[in-house]
Image (cartoon, helix red, strand yellow):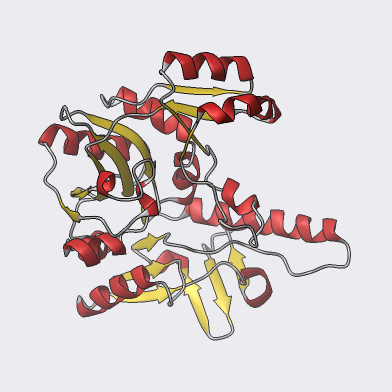
Length: 325
């Protein structure tokens, strides 16, 4: 058995899973996509009677048919080298991405997760619709570029409204020298209302702000579920818990109904791994916020001692049932 980890060997998650797989006598290779065009020979044959599917780098050949599972951890991006004419670089990059995407789709192996499914899952509006179909309660949500509808929504929610980005890649458009780089979940305040005309520039996403008792992170690894309770309301991250990791973070046993819903949603989204954010209200109700198909989990493992890396390794090694084959 061989496993391919599409990530850097410097990634702490990949390092830990690699160590576990090696202790299980499973062969592991690492590959990054960043320098694939410049440093690797790509060969794919179909319909020729000679099924070849390989990336060959100067120091190693990767026969992609040889891997029983692939962890699409943090693979980097296919990038073209610099060309004098920028449009040539864009063409080269586009063709290379198409080749790599097509090759990956052709592989008959276990994916954690398949790239195309990761891409689809990044659609937060689709997530919300799917979660509601799976039986989750979701926040009232408005997406619009009409300022007057935002004002009406604000009044209907008695001023309890938050704003969040819809696109996973949107933060990457913000210059690296901006502080902070990225936009967290933010409250829409009364003093923001005079500036709502900015909403007309692009659709924006607003949600009713749900009063929390705790934030709940659910990490799904194949058929295993790990619940984590974050005491966000005791620190600086009342709206967005990511602002304060100093609060109490502990392993948490989910009700079976919620655990089953998390498994079903992850499966319906075509994933074998997902990091789900829920709210637990004072009344004991669970509210779905979103699912991140590549969410970090090492901070949970360190704080709670939950064996998530072991579960990832076992999934890749075939000793945990996958949700999607």
